[in-house]
Length: 275
Image (tube, rainbow, N blue to C red):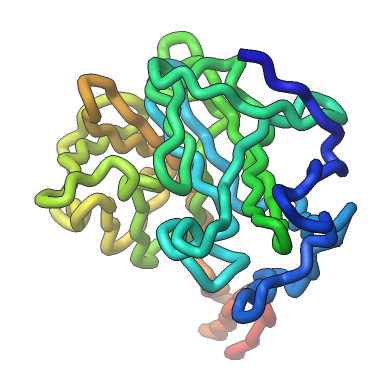
């Protein structure tokens, strides 16, 4: 089967239409989270690259969803399909968007998503979903990064998530995108590690569903937290780096001769003298 690449700016002819990409009555794009408006190129509304990025370790399954249905239009895949709209997928290669031929063995199309059953480093790149009929065309691209484990580790530092917390604060670390691997009748069985090793958590650190809740953060809680589950015989891991900063408020007391005492409280915004 042969597919002809096309330029990213060329949506191609619309089936049975005039190629102008006019919105059908009742179809209206949502306002973009950043307030941007999609550019219309050759009759197709192009939202460029979505804010969400997908990350996976080599060998893991990963699902890339068409962001149009989640951030840009007021409909879902089933409704769009019932009105005659078609969803097509392309992979960006330089200035070209190449139609994806789904093999079903390693990569398949399932409703509004691409499923990589065993992602490889070569799968990294931008994937564009195009929703269209004879009078309507809209597209957006999603970024996928696939990386190998770093030597001796269960993660790659390039594809970690980042969380920050201050000492003594309450912090919840989520296990990102685990809903993609949830069975209808049960929650995924998630196991947590710190620095890739099993950990006996102290009493104020508890697992809350798929998340890890630290009820009072200490400096030693900083580091790399990895959540892990099994899906169709494969391991799926997500690693989050937690950066811990010092107390938001620091009080210094100075003892002077003759029984005099002065103290200062320093915070992010001011220094208060309590002489």
